[in-house]
Length: 460
Length: 116
Ligand SMILES: Nc1ncnc2c1ncn2[C@@H]1O[C@H](COP(=O)(O)OP(=O)(O)O)[C@@H](O)[C@H]1O
Image (tube, rainbow over all chains, first blue to last red; front, side, top):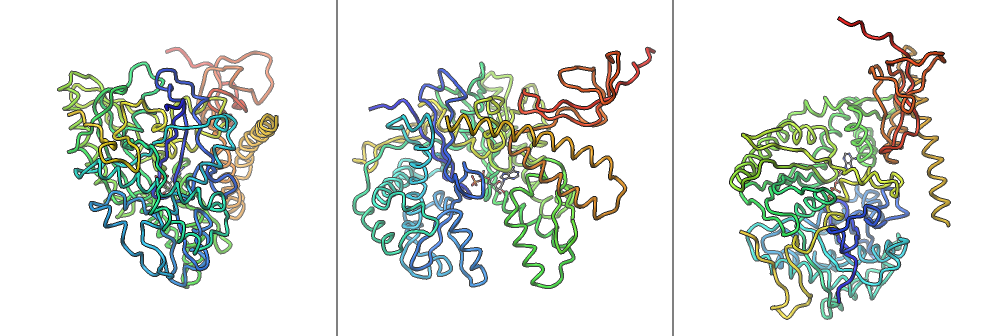
């Protein structure tokens, strides 16, 4: 049965996000019906962002910000939370990677393989979505959603099999969530034995679900195009998150779907986390903190406030922090003069220009006269990213148009100022919910009689 | 109903926040040469205010020092004058959210440019 609403999950390296939108959005767009989910309403951070983290400490398993806080408190004892597990999903041999035993720093109890911890996290995410849906005035009235998740496009490999494997994790997570329920959201964590039992049961009996896949760059194209009379036929997407910066070039037609130019794709391992480290080093140098204790204290203080610090640095060109009775100021220039940063900016610039050139060639061959470019992800507002996408106005005869990271409609009065500031981070989840069917990369029932999970053919 | 009440409270808090942001600019102008301790404290205060404001989707209206054609919907004159000026110089930027102006920019009249 088809439902009138779509729910899209963006399972991010640092944060997970989810958003819902009416299925008919593509034909009849109404900004007010775009509903990002409050996944972490009581947390210290932005309520739309759920920390992607799991921490194992007998007799409990902790999730989200509670997991990070506990891991930070025990950092001296060589303990760590499992984070960035999303990167695993792009492993060449996913099935094998999932069966890896995590290091003792992550699971000293030796209770789980990575797959178990990911399933537990997805169950936690599912529980947070159930709570978020119930809290939303509009969404609490909807009884079923067409579900999608966003993922980076897989290089080569067997797309259908990958989708099957990832969707299988969601199916198991559904069983765990039904089993443990809202207790997953308890900041004190869930009982370790109960968690272990729940993942074992889920493996044996995953809950049948329907879930579609949308590639992240396509989701960005969807939100960029919606509400515009003329959607882009050629679009470059620059996505800077916590762990990676991705460049993707898309060509096609919004309603019928886009195809990617594979030669243009670049994934750099430098992104938000990398910039955080440079900032910490600049700050350490400025602070003249000499003793290891003072350095550790500064390091901790900055790490815990880094998102806000970067926000101020990018928005105003400088940011200050107070340390040891003094106020210290860091300018954007300090970051831009760092050698590692310059290396990254150089590589990024070249990769971007290369992608734009290929895209312009494709546009010319397709008879298009314009191509568009957009930045998404938490780093989208960074001045060096915005400068990059705004620098080129023309490639040969093809006009280049930079699209805003935050579309005008995100400022609509209905959002009361809540959406626009965090839009670039929610862009993929929102775009994935708004996208027309034709943009999906795969869909299917999971677990599937193998014939039922299909990968949609790429348009050549 | 609860939601409507919450919205009303937010709107009032946002207006106060927008006001504080502009007031911090005034203060900054006044304490320019007061030594590193005061400047540091003020920098931190402005940073926190700026962050709170951006998190609430507020942005600046006009830039300090910029010249603009006087628009009573966007500008308020610092000194009351009987005649409406043609052009103004912005002294303290205003605050907006999207299209909505929460605080107008404060400005002083400038004498019209000489025709060459
Ligand atoms: N306003 C902002 N200014 C600068 N950096 C930001 C801002 N908001 C988030 N970030 C950074 O963006 C990164 C997270 O981005 P996100 O797109 O959510 O990543 P992912 O999808 O990989 O989880 C983090 O490094 C975070 O510090």
